[in-house]
Length: 350
Length: 272
Image (cartoon, chains in turn yellow, brown):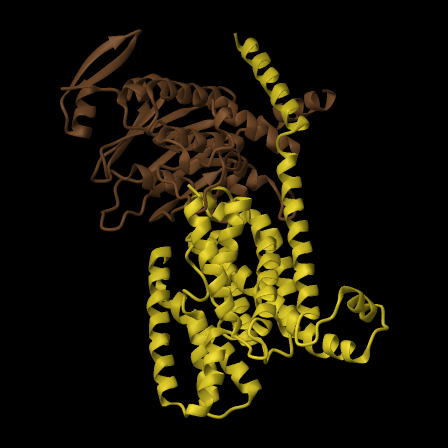
Protein backbone atom coordinates (compact mmCIF):
# COMPACT_ATOMS: atom_id res chain seq x y z
CA UNK A 1 0.00 0.00 0.00
CA UNK A 2 2.72 2.35 1.07
CA UNK A 3 4.96 1.30 -1.79
CA UNK A 4 2.13 1.86 -4.27
CA UNK A 5 1.76 5.40 -3.04
CA UNK A 6 5.49 5.94 -3.47
CA UNK A 7 5.51 4.74 -7.04
CA UNK A 8 2.51 6.92 -7.87
CA UNK A 9 4.33 9.90 -6.37
CA UNK A 10 7.36 9.06 -8.39
CA UNK A 11 5.39 8.85 -11.58
CA UNK A 12 3.70 12.18 -10.90
CA UNK A 13 7.09 13.74 -10.23
CA UNK A 14 8.40 12.34 -13.51
CA UNK A 15 5.40 13.65 -15.36
CA UNK A 16 5.73 17.06 -13.80
CA UNK A 17 9.46 17.05 -14.46
CA UNK A 18 8.93 16.29 -18.12
CA UNK A 19 6.44 19.13 -18.45
CA UNK A 20 8.94 21.51 -16.93
CA UNK A 21 11.68 20.49 -19.26
CA UNK A 22 9.47 20.73 -22.29
CA UNK A 23 7.82 24.08 -22.10
CA UNK A 24 6.39 25.44 -18.91
CA UNK A 25 8.52 27.55 -16.61
CA UNK A 26 11.76 28.47 -18.27
CA UNK A 27 9.59 30.33 -20.79
CA UNK A 28 8.55 32.79 -18.06
CA UNK A 29 12.25 33.46 -17.50
CA UNK A 30 12.80 34.01 -21.20
CA UNK A 31 9.69 36.15 -21.28
CA UNK A 32 11.15 38.50 -18.69
CA UNK A 33 14.47 38.76 -20.50
CA UNK A 34 12.66 39.61 -23.73
CA UNK A 35 10.64 42.26 -21.91
CA UNK A 36 13.75 43.86 -20.42
CA UNK A 37 15.57 43.77 -23.77
CA UNK A 38 12.59 45.40 -25.44
CA UNK A 39 12.52 48.14 -22.82
CA UNK A 40 16.25 48.69 -23.25
CA UNK A 41 15.77 49.16 -27.01
CA UNK A 42 12.91 51.59 -26.39
CA UNK A 43 15.18 53.49 -24.00
CA UNK A 44 17.88 53.76 -26.66
CA UNK A 45 15.32 55.02 -29.18
CA UNK A 46 14.11 57.58 -26.63
CA UNK A 47 17.67 58.69 -26.10
CA UNK A 48 18.40 58.94 -29.82
CA UNK A 49 15.21 60.95 -30.31
CA UNK A 50 16.12 63.26 -27.44
CA UNK A 51 19.51 64.14 -28.91
CA UNK A 52 18.37 64.52 -32.53
CA UNK A 53 15.05 66.36 -32.21
CA UNK A 54 14.95 70.07 -31.48
CA UNK A 55 15.35 73.53 -33.00
CA UNK A 56 18.11 72.10 -35.17
CA UNK A 57 17.14 68.58 -36.11
CA UNK A 58 19.90 66.06 -36.62
CA UNK A 59 19.45 63.05 -38.89
CA UNK A 60 20.49 59.54 -37.90
CA UNK A 61 23.45 59.70 -40.30
CA UNK A 62 24.60 63.00 -38.80
CA UNK A 63 24.14 61.60 -35.29
CA UNK A 64 26.25 58.58 -36.22
CA UNK A 65 28.93 60.87 -37.60
CA UNK A 66 29.09 62.74 -34.30
CA UNK A 67 29.28 59.47 -32.35
CA UNK A 68 32.17 58.38 -34.63
CA UNK A 69 34.00 61.60 -33.85
CA UNK A 70 33.44 63.46 -37.10
CA UNK A 71 30.40 65.54 -38.02
CA UNK A 72 29.66 69.26 -37.93
CA UNK A 73 30.84 71.37 -34.98
CA UNK A 74 27.36 72.78 -34.40
CA UNK A 75 25.93 69.29 -34.16
CA UNK A 76 28.65 68.16 -31.81
CA UNK A 77 28.12 71.16 -29.57
CA UNK A 78 24.37 70.66 -29.51
CA UNK A 79 24.63 66.97 -28.77
CA UNK A 80 27.49 66.93 -26.31
CA UNK A 81 26.96 70.07 -24.28
CA UNK A 82 23.18 70.56 -24.48
CA UNK A 83 21.05 67.62 -25.45
CA UNK A 84 22.98 64.70 -23.99
CA UNK A 85 23.16 66.08 -20.43
CA UNK A 86 19.48 66.95 -20.57
CA UNK A 87 18.51 63.52 -21.93
CA UNK A 88 20.67 61.83 -19.30
CA UNK A 89 18.99 63.92 -16.61
CA UNK A 90 15.54 63.07 -17.97
CA UNK A 91 16.29 59.36 -18.13
CA UNK A 92 17.80 59.15 -14.67
CA UNK A 93 15.00 61.19 -13.10
CA UNK A 94 12.37 58.98 -14.68
CA UNK A 95 14.22 55.85 -13.58
CA UNK A 96 14.62 57.14 -10.02
CA UNK A 97 10.96 58.11 -9.71
CA UNK A 98 9.65 54.85 -11.16
CA UNK A 99 11.94 52.75 -8.97
CA UNK A 100 10.99 54.76 -5.87
CA UNK A 101 7.31 54.34 -6.71
CA UNK A 102 7.65 50.59 -7.30
CA UNK A 103 9.51 50.16 -4.00
CA UNK A 104 6.99 52.20 -2.01
CA UNK A 105 4.11 50.28 -3.52
CA UNK A 106 5.55 46.97 -2.34
CA UNK A 107 6.46 48.42 1.04
CA UNK A 108 2.90 49.65 1.62
CA UNK A 109 1.29 46.82 -0.34
CA UNK A 110 -0.76 49.47 -2.06
CA UNK A 111 -0.58 50.35 -5.76
CA UNK A 112 -1.51 53.98 -4.97
CA UNK A 113 1.70 54.71 -3.10
CA UNK A 114 3.98 57.11 -4.96
CA UNK A 115 6.44 59.85 -3.96
CA UNK A 116 4.00 62.45 -5.24
CA UNK A 117 0.96 61.03 -3.42
CA UNK A 118 2.90 60.51 -0.17
CA UNK A 119 3.83 64.19 0.04
CA UNK A 120 7.57 63.75 -0.51
CA UNK A 121 7.55 65.87 -3.65
CA UNK A 122 5.52 68.49 -1.79
CA UNK A 123 8.14 68.72 0.93
CA UNK A 124 10.86 69.10 -1.68
CA UNK A 125 8.85 71.81 -3.44
CA UNK A 126 8.45 73.79 -0.21
CA UNK A 127 12.19 73.53 0.38
CA UNK A 128 13.00 74.69 -3.14
CA UNK A 129 10.45 77.52 -3.25
CA UNK A 130 11.60 78.75 0.16
CA UNK A 131 15.17 78.97 -1.14
CA UNK A 132 13.98 80.72 -4.32
CA UNK A 133 11.99 83.24 -2.26
CA UNK A 134 15.10 83.95 -0.24
CA UNK A 135 16.87 84.66 -3.50
CA UNK A 136 19.32 81.77 -3.18
CA UNK A 137 21.25 80.32 -6.11
CA UNK A 138 20.60 77.02 -7.86
CA UNK A 139 22.88 74.96 -5.59
CA UNK A 140 21.08 76.13 -2.46
CA UNK A 141 17.69 75.52 -4.11
CA UNK A 142 18.75 71.96 -4.89
CA UNK A 143 20.06 71.35 -1.40
CA UNK A 144 16.97 72.81 0.14
CA UNK A 145 14.73 70.63 -2.06
CA UNK A 146 16.70 67.56 -1.01
CA UNK A 147 16.29 68.51 2.64
CA UNK A 148 12.57 69.12 2.15
CA UNK A 149 12.05 65.71 0.57
CA UNK A 150 13.92 63.92 3.33
CA UNK A 151 12.13 65.93 6.03
CA UNK A 152 8.81 65.06 4.48
CA UNK A 153 9.71 61.37 4.31
CA UNK A 154 10.72 61.23 7.94
CA UNK A 155 7.63 63.18 8.90
CA UNK A 156 5.23 60.90 7.04
CA UNK A 157 6.85 57.59 7.92
CA UNK A 158 7.60 58.70 11.48
CA UNK A 159 4.05 59.87 12.20
CA UNK A 160 2.55 56.77 10.62
CA UNK A 161 4.85 54.43 12.54
CA UNK A 162 2.70 53.91 15.61
CA UNK A 163 2.91 51.00 18.00
CA UNK A 164 3.30 47.76 16.09
CA UNK A 165 4.79 49.08 12.89
CA UNK A 166 3.49 50.69 9.75
CA UNK A 167 -0.04 50.04 8.81
CA UNK A 168 -0.20 50.67 5.08
CA UNK A 169 -3.52 52.48 5.33
CA UNK A 170 -2.33 54.80 8.07
CA UNK A 171 0.85 55.53 6.14
CA UNK A 172 -1.03 56.36 2.96
CA UNK A 173 -3.52 58.57 4.80
CA UNK A 174 -0.72 60.36 6.67
CA UNK A 175 1.06 60.93 3.36
CA UNK A 176 -2.02 62.34 1.68
CA UNK A 177 -2.74 64.68 4.59
CA UNK A 178 0.88 65.86 4.74
CA UNK A 179 0.81 66.38 0.95
CA UNK A 180 -2.29 68.53 1.34
CA UNK A 181 -0.50 70.51 4.05
CA UNK A 182 2.50 71.13 1.79
CA UNK A 183 0.07 72.13 -0.95
CA UNK A 184 -1.32 74.88 1.28
CA UNK A 185 2.19 76.08 2.17
CA UNK A 186 3.09 76.17 -1.52
CA UNK A 187 0.01 78.22 -2.38
CA UNK A 188 0.88 80.59 0.46
CA UNK A 189 4.43 81.00 -0.82
CA UNK A 190 3.22 81.62 -4.36
CA UNK A 191 0.84 84.31 -3.10
CA UNK A 192 3.63 85.99 -1.16
CA UNK A 193 6.23 85.93 -3.90
CA UNK A 194 6.99 88.80 -6.30
CA UNK A 195 5.32 88.44 -9.69
CA UNK A 196 8.54 88.15 -11.68
CA UNK A 197 9.71 85.03 -9.85
CA UNK A 198 6.37 83.22 -10.30
CA UNK A 199 7.03 81.55 -13.69
CA UNK A 200 10.24 79.91 -12.46
CA UNK A 201 8.47 78.63 -9.39
CA UNK A 202 5.51 77.27 -11.33
CA UNK A 203 7.84 75.48 -13.70
CA UNK A 204 9.65 73.94 -10.78
CA UNK A 205 6.35 72.80 -9.27
CA UNK A 206 5.33 70.98 -12.43
CA UNK A 207 8.78 69.51 -12.90
CA UNK A 208 11.19 70.96 -15.42
CA UNK A 209 14.43 69.66 -16.85
CA UNK A 210 15.67 72.82 -18.52
CA UNK A 211 17.90 73.64 -15.55
CA UNK A 212 19.13 70.08 -15.13
CA UNK A 213 22.71 70.34 -16.31
CA UNK A 214 24.30 67.87 -13.94
CA UNK A 215 22.74 64.44 -14.36
CA UNK A 216 25.74 62.74 -12.77
CA UNK A 217 24.48 62.79 -9.18
CA UNK A 218 21.24 61.16 -10.29
CA UNK A 219 23.14 58.47 -12.20
CA UNK A 220 25.54 57.92 -9.33
CA UNK A 221 22.52 57.12 -7.14
CA UNK A 222 20.44 55.26 -9.73
CA UNK A 223 23.01 52.68 -10.82
CA UNK A 224 23.97 51.38 -7.34
CA UNK A 225 20.29 51.49 -6.34
CA UNK A 226 19.34 49.19 -9.21
CA UNK A 227 22.18 46.82 -8.36
CA UNK A 228 21.07 46.84 -4.73
CA UNK A 229 17.41 46.13 -5.47
CA UNK A 230 18.05 43.25 -7.86
CA UNK A 231 18.91 40.70 -5.13
CA UNK A 232 16.08 42.10 -2.96
CA UNK A 233 13.47 41.20 -5.56
CA UNK A 234 12.47 37.77 -4.31
CA UNK A 235 12.29 38.94 -0.70
CA UNK A 236 10.05 41.78 -1.84
CA UNK A 237 7.82 39.25 -3.60
CA UNK A 238 7.44 37.53 -0.25
CA UNK A 239 6.92 40.82 1.58
CA UNK A 240 4.04 41.58 -0.78
CA UNK A 241 2.16 38.69 0.88
CA UNK A 242 2.16 40.59 4.16
CA UNK A 243 4.71 40.88 6.96
CA UNK A 244 3.57 37.78 8.89
CA UNK A 245 3.68 35.48 5.89
CA UNK A 246 7.03 36.99 4.90
CA UNK A 247 8.49 36.36 8.35
CA UNK A 248 7.19 32.79 8.27
CA UNK A 249 8.99 32.31 4.95
CA UNK A 250 12.30 33.44 6.34
CA UNK A 251 12.39 37.17 5.53
CA UNK A 252 13.85 39.50 8.16
CA UNK A 253 10.91 41.87 7.76
CA UNK A 254 11.99 44.91 9.79
CA UNK A 255 15.48 45.31 8.22
CA UNK A 256 14.03 44.80 4.75
CA UNK A 257 11.27 47.38 5.33
CA UNK A 258 13.73 49.94 6.66
CA UNK A 259 16.15 49.50 3.78
CA UNK A 260 13.37 49.82 1.22
CA UNK A 261 12.05 52.91 2.97
CA UNK A 262 15.42 54.65 3.19
CA UNK A 263 16.28 53.73 -0.38
CA UNK A 264 12.95 54.96 -1.75
CA UNK A 265 13.28 58.26 0.14
CA UNK A 266 16.79 58.81 -1.14
CA UNK A 267 15.77 58.04 -4.73
CA UNK A 268 12.86 60.45 -4.51
CA UNK A 269 14.93 63.21 -2.96
CA UNK A 270 17.56 62.94 -5.69
CA UNK A 271 14.93 62.86 -8.45
CA UNK A 272 13.07 65.88 -7.13
CA UNK A 273 16.32 67.76 -6.70
CA UNK A 274 17.24 67.08 -10.32
CA UNK A 275 13.98 67.99 -12.02
CA UNK A 276 11.44 69.40 -9.62
CA UNK A 277 8.27 67.56 -8.74
CA UNK A 278 7.41 65.48 -11.77
CA UNK A 279 4.24 63.60 -10.94
CA UNK A 280 2.70 60.33 -12.10
CA UNK A 281 5.88 58.57 -13.24
CA UNK A 282 6.25 56.66 -9.97
CA UNK A 283 2.56 55.82 -9.92
CA UNK A 284 1.88 54.93 -13.52
CA UNK A 285 5.03 53.21 -14.76
CA UNK A 286 5.14 50.35 -12.22
CA UNK A 287 1.40 49.90 -12.47
CA UNK A 288 1.39 49.65 -16.26
CA UNK A 289 4.27 47.19 -16.13
CA UNK A 290 2.43 45.05 -13.58
CA UNK A 291 -0.61 44.85 -15.82
CA UNK A 292 1.60 43.51 -18.61
CA UNK A 293 4.40 41.62 -16.83
CA UNK A 294 2.78 40.35 -13.64
CA UNK A 295 3.97 40.92 -10.10
CA UNK A 296 7.48 39.51 -9.92
CA UNK A 297 9.57 42.32 -8.40
CA UNK A 298 12.71 40.82 -9.91
CA UNK A 299 11.38 41.94 -13.30
CA UNK A 300 9.23 44.88 -12.23
CA UNK A 301 12.03 46.82 -10.51
CA UNK A 302 14.57 46.89 -13.38
CA UNK A 303 11.75 47.23 -15.92
CA UNK A 304 10.44 50.25 -14.00
CA UNK A 305 13.81 51.95 -14.24
CA UNK A 306 14.01 51.44 -18.01
CA UNK A 307 10.37 52.32 -18.70
CA UNK A 308 10.39 55.30 -16.34
CA UNK A 309 13.59 56.59 -17.89
CA UNK A 310 12.33 56.14 -21.45
CA UNK A 311 8.97 57.74 -20.61
CA UNK A 312 10.51 60.85 -19.11
CA UNK A 313 13.05 61.15 -21.93
CA UNK A 314 10.25 61.03 -24.53
CA UNK A 315 8.12 63.38 -22.45
CA UNK A 316 10.94 65.89 -22.11
CA UNK A 317 11.65 65.79 -25.85
CA UNK A 318 7.97 66.51 -26.46
CA UNK A 319 7.97 69.21 -23.80
CA UNK A 320 10.70 71.21 -25.49
CA UNK A 321 9.56 70.72 -29.09
CA UNK A 322 5.78 70.56 -29.18
CA UNK A 323 5.31 74.31 -28.73
CA UNK A 324 8.82 75.43 -29.69
CA UNK A 325 10.32 77.89 -29.07
CA UNK A 326 8.15 77.79 -25.92
CA UNK A 327 9.12 75.00 -23.49
CA UNK A 328 6.50 73.23 -21.43
CA UNK A 329 7.18 71.82 -17.97
CA UNK A 330 7.77 68.09 -18.45
CA UNK A 331 5.33 67.29 -15.63
CA UNK A 332 2.48 68.59 -17.80
CA UNK A 333 3.40 66.07 -20.49
CA UNK A 334 3.75 63.12 -18.09
CA UNK A 335 0.38 63.95 -16.60
CA UNK A 336 -1.31 64.40 -19.99
CA UNK A 337 0.20 61.16 -21.30
CA UNK A 338 0.02 59.18 -18.10
CA UNK A 339 -3.47 59.84 -16.84
CA UNK A 340 -5.41 58.61 -19.89
CA UNK A 341 -3.07 55.64 -20.40
CA UNK A 342 -3.49 54.68 -16.79
CA UNK A 343 -7.27 54.99 -16.86
CA UNK A 344 -7.46 53.00 -20.08
CA UNK A 345 -5.31 50.15 -18.75
CA UNK A 346 -7.19 50.10 -15.48
CA UNK A 347 -10.50 49.98 -17.27
CA UNK A 348 -9.40 47.23 -19.64
CA UNK A 349 -7.99 44.93 -16.95
CA UNK A 350 -10.96 42.88 -15.60
CA UNK B 1 13.85 11.83 -19.85
CA UNK B 2 16.94 10.90 -17.90
CA UNK B 3 17.13 14.39 -16.49
CA UNK B 4 13.54 14.18 -15.37
CA UNK B 5 14.14 11.00 -13.39
CA UNK B 6 17.26 12.53 -11.84
CA UNK B 7 15.18 15.47 -10.81
CA UNK B 8 12.55 13.22 -9.34
CA UNK B 9 15.16 11.40 -7.31
CA UNK B 10 16.65 14.64 -6.06
CA UNK B 11 13.19 15.81 -5.04
CA UNK B 12 12.69 12.70 -2.98
CA UNK B 13 15.95 13.33 -1.20
CA UNK B 14 15.31 16.92 -0.36
CA UNK B 15 11.75 16.34 0.82
CA UNK B 16 12.94 13.98 3.54
CA UNK B 17 14.25 16.62 5.91
CA UNK B 18 15.92 15.62 9.15
CA UNK B 19 13.26 15.49 11.82
CA UNK B 20 13.40 18.25 14.39
CA UNK B 21 11.39 18.77 17.53
CA UNK B 22 9.64 21.90 18.68
CA UNK B 23 9.61 22.43 22.40
CA UNK B 24 7.74 24.93 24.54
CA UNK B 25 9.55 25.76 27.77
CA UNK B 26 7.60 27.56 30.52
CA UNK B 27 5.88 29.34 27.65
CA UNK B 28 3.33 32.06 28.43
CA UNK B 29 1.70 33.61 25.40
CA UNK B 30 1.50 37.39 25.49
CA UNK B 31 -2.10 38.46 24.98
CA UNK B 32 -2.60 42.12 25.95
CA UNK B 33 -5.07 42.60 28.79
CA UNK B 34 -5.06 38.96 29.82
CA UNK B 35 -3.54 37.50 32.99
CA UNK B 36 -0.76 34.99 32.43
CA UNK B 37 -2.23 31.50 32.51
CA UNK B 38 -0.41 28.33 33.38
CA UNK B 39 2.88 28.09 31.47
CA UNK B 40 2.93 25.63 28.58
CA UNK B 41 5.58 22.94 28.81
CA UNK B 42 5.53 20.37 26.06
CA UNK B 43 7.55 18.81 23.33
CA UNK B 44 6.04 18.25 19.92
CA UNK B 45 7.89 15.18 18.73
CA UNK B 46 8.45 14.14 15.12
CA UNK B 47 5.53 12.06 13.92
CA UNK B 48 3.04 13.59 16.35
CA UNK B 49 -0.15 15.34 15.29
CA UNK B 50 -1.36 17.89 17.79
CA UNK B 51 -4.76 19.55 17.67
CA UNK B 52 -5.55 22.77 19.54
CA UNK B 53 -9.18 23.18 20.55
CA UNK B 54 -10.79 26.16 22.17
CA UNK B 55 -13.58 28.70 21.78
CA UNK B 56 -13.20 31.92 19.76
CA UNK B 57 -10.72 34.30 21.32
CA UNK B 58 -9.10 31.68 23.55
CA UNK B 59 -5.72 32.52 22.02
CA UNK B 60 -5.20 29.57 19.66
CA UNK B 61 -3.75 31.75 16.90
CA UNK B 62 -1.57 33.68 19.35
CA UNK B 63 -0.18 30.41 20.69
CA UNK B 64 0.53 29.18 17.17
CA UNK B 65 2.27 32.43 16.19
CA UNK B 66 4.32 32.34 19.40
CA UNK B 67 5.44 28.80 18.62
CA UNK B 68 6.44 30.01 15.16
CA UNK B 69 8.49 32.80 16.69
CA UNK B 70 6.33 35.45 15.01
CA UNK B 71 5.22 36.86 18.34
CA UNK B 72 7.44 37.30 21.38
CA UNK B 73 6.22 35.32 24.40
CA UNK B 74 5.43 37.03 27.71
CA UNK B 75 7.81 34.60 29.37
CA UNK B 76 9.48 31.31 28.66
CA UNK B 77 10.82 30.27 25.28
CA UNK B 78 10.36 28.02 22.30
CA UNK B 79 13.16 25.68 21.28
CA UNK B 80 13.66 24.36 17.77
CA UNK B 81 15.90 21.33 17.88
CA UNK B 82 17.20 22.50 21.25
CA UNK B 83 17.97 26.09 20.19
CA UNK B 84 15.84 29.03 21.32
CA UNK B 85 13.92 30.59 18.42
CA UNK B 86 15.10 34.03 19.50
CA UNK B 87 18.67 33.01 18.65
CA UNK B 88 17.81 31.68 15.20
CA UNK B 89 17.37 33.78 12.07
CA UNK B 90 13.97 33.84 10.39
CA UNK B 91 15.57 32.04 7.48
CA UNK B 92 16.87 29.20 9.67
CA UNK B 93 13.45 28.81 11.25
CA UNK B 94 11.69 28.87 7.88
CA UNK B 95 13.87 26.04 6.64
CA UNK B 96 12.20 23.77 9.18
CA UNK B 97 8.90 25.35 10.15
CA UNK B 98 6.00 26.16 7.84
CA UNK B 99 3.07 28.25 9.01
CA UNK B 100 -0.38 28.21 7.45
CA UNK B 101 -2.20 31.41 8.32
CA UNK B 102 -5.90 32.06 8.64
CA UNK B 103 -5.69 35.40 6.92
CA UNK B 104 -3.88 36.28 3.74
CA UNK B 105 -2.97 39.52 2.03
CA UNK B 106 -2.46 39.92 -1.62
CA UNK B 107 -2.12 43.53 -2.61
CA UNK B 108 -0.07 42.39 -5.60
CA UNK B 109 -1.57 39.05 -6.57
CA UNK B 110 0.67 36.38 -8.02
CA UNK B 111 -0.36 33.28 -9.94
CA UNK B 112 -1.09 30.04 -8.12
CA UNK B 113 2.20 28.58 -9.33
CA UNK B 114 4.26 31.60 -8.25
CA UNK B 115 2.58 31.51 -4.85
CA UNK B 116 3.49 27.87 -4.30
CA UNK B 117 7.03 28.50 -5.56
CA UNK B 118 7.57 31.19 -2.94
CA UNK B 119 7.67 28.32 -0.43
CA UNK B 120 11.21 27.69 -1.67
CA UNK B 121 12.32 31.19 -0.63
CA UNK B 122 14.11 30.17 2.60
CA UNK B 123 16.31 27.75 0.66
CA UNK B 124 17.57 30.21 -1.95
CA UNK B 125 20.36 32.73 -1.56
CA UNK B 126 20.03 36.37 -2.62
CA UNK B 127 21.21 35.99 -6.19
CA UNK B 128 19.87 32.51 -6.78
CA UNK B 129 16.90 31.84 -9.01
CA UNK B 130 14.61 28.88 -8.45
CA UNK B 131 16.18 25.72 -9.84
CA UNK B 132 14.38 23.03 -11.83
CA UNK B 133 14.19 21.10 -8.58
CA UNK B 134 12.41 23.95 -6.79
CA UNK B 135 9.99 24.19 -9.68
CA UNK B 136 9.37 20.47 -9.44
CA UNK B 137 8.69 20.68 -5.70
CA UNK B 138 6.19 23.48 -6.28
CA UNK B 139 4.49 21.56 -9.07
CA UNK B 140 4.26 18.44 -6.95
CA UNK B 141 2.79 20.47 -4.11
CA UNK B 142 0.14 21.91 -6.45
CA UNK B 143 -0.53 18.42 -7.74
CA UNK B 144 -1.02 17.10 -4.20
CA UNK B 145 -3.66 19.79 -3.61
CA UNK B 146 -5.25 19.14 -7.06
CA UNK B 147 -4.42 22.69 -8.12
CA UNK B 148 -2.44 21.93 -11.28
CA UNK B 149 -5.29 22.99 -13.61
CA UNK B 150 -5.43 26.36 -11.80
CA UNK B 151 -1.68 27.02 -11.73
CA UNK B 152 -1.68 30.02 -14.07
CA UNK B 153 -4.67 31.73 -12.48
CA UNK B 154 -4.18 34.76 -10.23
CA UNK B 155 -4.86 33.82 -6.62
CA UNK B 156 -7.32 36.70 -6.31
CA UNK B 157 -9.60 35.01 -8.85
CA UNK B 158 -9.88 31.84 -6.73
CA UNK B 159 -12.56 30.84 -4.24
CA UNK B 160 -11.83 30.82 -0.51
CA UNK B 161 -11.33 27.07 -0.43
CA UNK B 162 -9.04 27.11 -3.44
CA UNK B 163 -6.92 29.81 -1.83
CA UNK B 164 -6.71 27.77 1.34
CA UNK B 165 -5.37 24.89 -0.74
CA UNK B 166 -2.81 27.24 -2.36
CA UNK B 167 -1.61 28.19 1.13
CA UNK B 168 -1.22 24.52 2.02
CA UNK B 169 0.59 23.84 -1.25
CA UNK B 170 2.99 26.72 -0.46
CA UNK B 171 3.76 25.15 2.91
CA UNK B 172 4.19 21.76 1.23
CA UNK B 173 6.72 23.23 -1.22
CA UNK B 174 8.61 24.48 1.83
CA UNK B 175 9.04 20.77 2.79
CA UNK B 176 8.93 21.57 6.50
CA UNK B 177 9.64 19.22 9.35
CA UNK B 178 7.26 21.18 11.60
CA UNK B 179 3.79 22.21 10.40
CA UNK B 180 2.02 24.97 12.30
CA UNK B 181 -1.41 25.21 10.75
CA UNK B 182 -4.08 27.67 11.83
CA UNK B 183 -7.38 26.04 10.91
CA UNK B 184 -6.05 24.27 7.81
CA UNK B 185 -9.55 23.10 6.85
CA UNK B 186 -11.02 26.63 6.74
CA UNK B 187 -13.28 27.15 3.71
CA UNK B 188 -12.63 23.60 2.48
CA UNK B 189 -15.37 21.28 1.25
CA UNK B 190 -15.73 17.88 2.94
CA UNK B 191 -13.58 16.05 0.42
CA UNK B 192 -10.72 18.52 0.65
CA UNK B 193 -10.96 18.63 4.45
CA UNK B 194 -10.23 14.92 4.49
CA UNK B 195 -7.58 15.28 1.77
CA UNK B 196 -5.72 17.91 3.81
CA UNK B 197 -5.95 15.84 6.99
CA UNK B 198 -4.63 12.82 5.06
CA UNK B 199 -1.77 14.90 3.69
CA UNK B 200 -0.81 16.12 7.16
CA UNK B 201 -1.04 12.58 8.53
CA UNK B 202 1.22 11.40 5.72
CA UNK B 203 3.70 14.16 6.53
CA UNK B 204 3.68 13.02 10.16
CA UNK B 205 4.27 9.44 9.02
CA UNK B 206 7.36 10.66 7.22
CA UNK B 207 8.72 12.23 10.39
CA UNK B 208 7.23 15.73 10.40
CA UNK B 209 5.39 17.06 13.41
CA UNK B 210 2.02 18.75 12.99
CA UNK B 211 0.46 21.32 15.30
CA UNK B 212 -2.89 22.67 14.18
CA UNK B 213 -5.73 24.78 15.50
CA UNK B 214 -9.06 23.18 14.70
CA UNK B 215 -12.69 24.09 15.16
CA UNK B 216 -14.06 20.72 14.15
CA UNK B 217 -14.05 18.35 17.13
CA UNK B 218 -14.62 15.37 14.89
CA UNK B 219 -11.65 16.11 12.64
CA UNK B 220 -9.56 16.53 15.79
CA UNK B 221 -10.86 13.24 17.20
CA UNK B 222 -10.11 11.38 13.99
CA UNK B 223 -6.80 12.91 12.89
CA UNK B 224 -4.92 14.05 16.01
CA UNK B 225 -2.98 11.92 18.46
CA UNK B 226 -2.51 14.77 20.96
CA UNK B 227 -5.00 17.45 21.93
CA UNK B 228 -4.52 20.75 23.69
CA UNK B 229 -7.58 22.40 25.19
CA UNK B 230 -7.24 26.16 25.50
CA UNK B 231 -9.69 27.92 27.83
CA UNK B 232 -10.61 31.59 27.42
CA UNK B 233 -8.99 32.51 30.76
CA UNK B 234 -5.62 31.26 29.49
CA UNK B 235 -5.80 27.91 31.29
CA UNK B 236 -4.76 24.92 29.22
CA UNK B 237 -4.54 21.17 29.47
CA UNK B 238 -3.22 18.65 27.02
CA UNK B 239 -2.49 14.99 26.56
CA UNK B 240 -3.06 12.02 24.28
CA UNK B 241 -6.23 12.48 22.24
CA UNK B 242 -8.20 9.57 23.68
CA UNK B 243 -7.71 10.94 27.21
CA UNK B 244 -8.71 14.47 26.25
CA UNK B 245 -11.90 13.62 24.41
CA UNK B 246 -14.03 13.62 27.54
CA UNK B 247 -17.47 15.05 26.75
CA UNK B 248 -17.70 16.93 30.09
CA UNK B 249 -14.36 18.69 29.51
CA UNK B 250 -15.31 19.59 25.93
CA UNK B 251 -18.72 20.86 27.06
CA UNK B 252 -17.00 23.09 29.61
CA UNK B 253 -14.49 24.24 26.96
CA UNK B 254 -17.11 25.46 24.52
CA UNK B 255 -19.96 26.11 26.96
CA UNK B 256 -22.08 23.92 24.71
CA UNK B 257 -23.97 20.70 25.35
CA UNK B 258 -22.72 17.79 23.21
CA UNK B 259 -24.13 14.43 22.20
CA UNK B 260 -21.59 11.66 21.63
CA UNK B 261 -21.82 8.58 19.48
CA UNK B 262 -19.23 6.27 18.04
CA UNK B 263 -18.46 5.48 14.41
CA UNK B 264 -15.70 3.03 13.47
CA UNK B 265 -14.36 3.12 17.00
CA UNK B 266 -13.91 6.91 16.99
CA UNK B 267 -16.10 9.25 19.03
CA UNK B 268 -18.31 11.65 17.10
CA UNK B 269 -19.57 14.82 18.75
CA UNK B 270 -22.74 16.66 17.81
CA UNK B 271 -23.76 19.94 19.46
CA UNK B 272 -27.31 19.88 20.82
